[in-house]
Amino acid sequence: MIAPPMRSRSLHVARDQVHLGWSRDHEPVIAVPSGAELSIETQDASAGQLGPGSTSASVTELDFARVNPVCGPVYVEGAAPGDTLQVDILALEPTGHGWTAIIPGFGLLADRFPNPWLHVWRLEDSRAIFDDRIGVPMQPFCGILGVAPAEPGLHSVIPPRRVGGNLDTRQLGAGTTLYLPVEVDGALFGAGDTHAAQGDGEVCGTAIETPMTVSLRLTVRRDIAVETPELDVSQPLERPGAAAAGYHATTGVAPDLMQATRQAVERMIAYLARVHRLSEEQAYALCSVTVDLRISEVVDVPNYVVTAFLPNDIFTGS
Image (cartoon, rainbow, N blue to C red; front, top):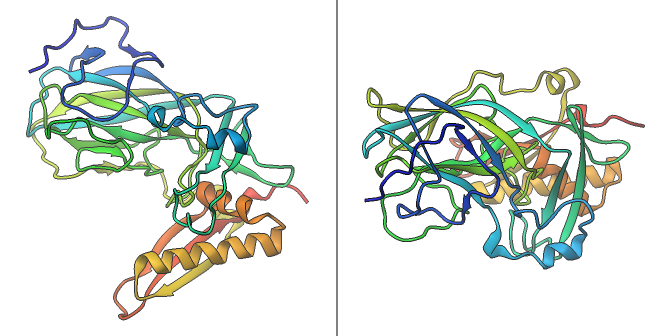
């Protein structure tokens, strides 16, 4: 059993206090009482390898052993297997830049996009600037929020788990409460992979990746039990600006949900290229950061319908 560290007075996790992979054996970087608020300075998903000055060639040079660093772990006093950790997300403050990449071998359409590609975003006020015509409204959230699994060994951060982790759920922003099942003493909570914006699906494999300062409250709950992550969302699922401006939507119709998803995204890429004169790589990346995928029906067998919704409010110029 890991002994908890001395409780910190500042209740702060610094940007260099990270681990690479989930493990019940990681030494905690801080211990906090149940109900404590703390701030976490996250790294971007590349651990600083991509940013201003980077190019597509930089993507091929990525050291994947450093990708997706998780800040922590945080030992929550009193947390024990069978408990639930309540994570109240209080605030997120992005930095002044972000990036979106197409990484060879990764993403929904990896077979169609075998070459590296990179866009570095300028974050201004409430928008991420793509070019002089397109600006994506920022909706910051944590892609990774989780606790350590009980299974021994070191576990990759890439796949999500029943104890959370790389959930990439864009509703995990300020005002949301997340509930995680605890499997080890102290829970060993971690956070990272912060995004300035993302569409539901994150189809190219990256969102607008950026470091942030995240404020959280961690509370041990014994009066509720969850089997997998659950969340309470206090904000509308639809952005008001997007609702006012409307959407263009494409569909995929197929007997397999993944096939239907691919069709919907491929048709949105074709639409963006035809109507908005984007390259296929630009369109694919834009789908990842702003297009929301919806399962429209799963009952009219043999075919299912997936719909991709593109919000019109991202188009800001002539």
